[in-house]
Length: 192
Image (cartoon, rainbow, N blue to C red):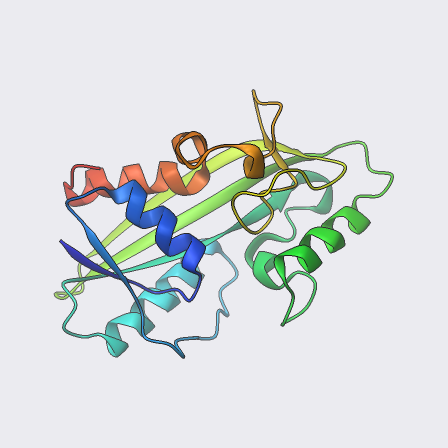
């Protein structure tokens, strides 16, 4: 099955390709794809991206869009849908992590969850939606060199290592994106 992924994030493309398995070929959307993510929820933004991708690659059997982010309890769910640009429109992962740590100075409640919503649109406009979450807490400082985004700060429940300290296989087994990808594979009847 050929899937065109509506993202410019190579980390997401690599992860989703590995999670969906050998029966799926994941291609990235052409450069320059950047629809305005004006939704108030992860689902709304994923749907915006999926519909925009369908216009860009109308011949693709399936387009897939991901919207994901970090929801921190003490920050009323922020950064949420603004996770990628939490420190500003051109923020790097390091900038976003620094902003998050600054916002949590002196805060004892470090509970957080990664959230991922995947929306797949077939050529006939039929839709498959999958959601995944991973609960954990925010560390006091970045740890590890793997992953991307907030992975150096996020310690999953039941673990002592940050996501960025886990192997790709360990991360994919418990991550929000891994859980959503497995749910999506079941919905699409793909062996992941």
